[in-house]
Image (cartoon, rainbow, N blue to C red; front, side):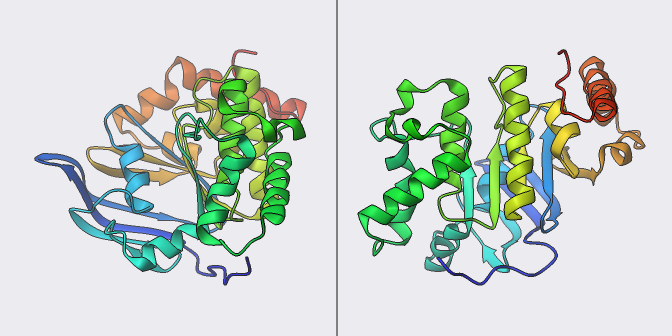
Length: 275
């Protein structure tokens, strides 16, 4: 799996993006640059198109206008041969895990390996799958279980293991802690940061979880008014007077997350708000 890794400063660059479903425009004039090696949190109200933006970046959403570059290559959503090839350089954790229910965890992880490296022997595919299971924090026996036999948190980790199958440079996570209890969410956050620190991924993370934003995100991009209205650290965003930003970060949950983060720093360990 030796590949030339992207060495530029911005592995994801979106310029003037427009997306639409018929006459319903989701994004218009959207610009965003993601820095290499960062965890970028993406937030926005319901209907602002967070998942649509991610789908456009990974080539699953046709562009109505604008340009997207990923790892130096143009993305248009037309499923060209070049776009299909670049998919081997990113991993995606969709909401809910999106695992194939009729395959075991190991078999799910092997799917992208079969697609992009059909010459790999079954024994090596199996070995890689078991390593990714371990990397995601699952017990070894989880490899032979079906998604229906796993808890919600374990399914998330199994989906993450599949996203890591190809040793990706980019990792896309869509609401990875949604539906998890505070302890499970905190553990997933810690795993995400540990993997990023160890493997050097650039992480594009869609979330509504304020604890996640405070705990592991280097910067946060805010979607509103069909575009990215601001990108920065949370203190930088709090200095802006946009009403949605103020309501989101200074509301009761935002204050609780900020307080929990301050307490965690004082105790030198991660803490979820409300614990």
